[in-house]
View 1 (cartoon, helix red, strand yellow):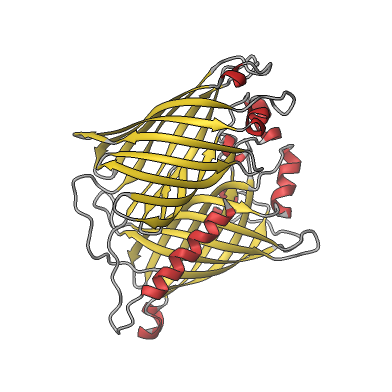
View 2 (cartoon, rainbow, N blue to C red):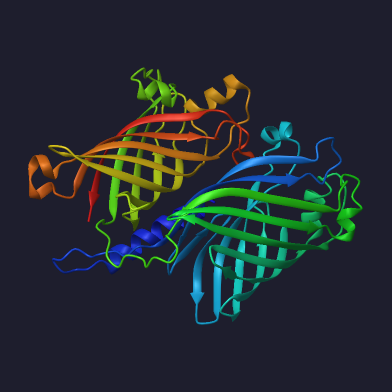
Length: 432
């Protein structure tokens, strides 16, 4: 996951700098294919337990251009694409459904990574061949057929898949590393659904069933041969039946920030009751903003895809560590005597080593910490061009809260944690 976020940052930033218009006129950007949403996922538990179902909240990001794609549960880098073929490096969320009380201890949810070769049969039909493994090298492969249909406000994409799992894969996920399970083939069928409600608002749903292979069914730890998944939620996407804007009123940005850790929660920070970190832990971050749209529901909101790199400095209680962020951020500008802008970002954050300020809170609450957490950024900035004139016309000075958390124990993907870390930061943001 961290490698994909870093690659996204490098691809987006490098591409735009290389392709930027070298003339005196500023390059314009068109509206992108994008979306942001959240779904509530329920999965059946195949293991021998008293609980039969577990649920979780899953944030979703969507974006696609000529180089990368974010499709909610799946993301990828396009390595080759022609009229009928596409070859990509991909990563996909892998949920391991078990009773909720064990999810923080085991943190078995992970990301599968690998390569995908996709062939377009027709305009609405595809065949995918994938070579994949989880983050510990347990190999499997997929052969999938999918199709896309549309009827009025309803879009649905049924699919069928054969998944061949190695013995190492089956022994871990179905034998729980206690029983040797031979290689085998799982059969998967499902459908993705998207319903346009109004303007940029959509409802999202997904249903999937998985029939375990014969040897996996024989595992002494497996009770149910069929695993089921159901997703229900909502999202904001490009408005259906409305052409994308050819030229947006916004431009890319670079933002450099420096922040100071605080044990205070967001509510205390906003109300001015910020407690100082006694060890003065600090971070420095660099974020890139890629324009997505400058309007939603007919309202002037500027949206950006914003990957970022965060350097956590060493201190008396922690070593240097790196954090990788991928988010979508929205800005709303108010024209006072000087332009003032409010911002809010939602995304994911992966850190190499959990910081002292975060680990301390996990220890106090009795949680096992998680390197992957939900990311939020709250910001308020001021347009310096209004104060100092044309030379600083594209520069903003601001304050932000850099926040990592796990959405109040609601997400198995983030380790069923309540709490996280906060940093008060100041930044300079340059639009070019």
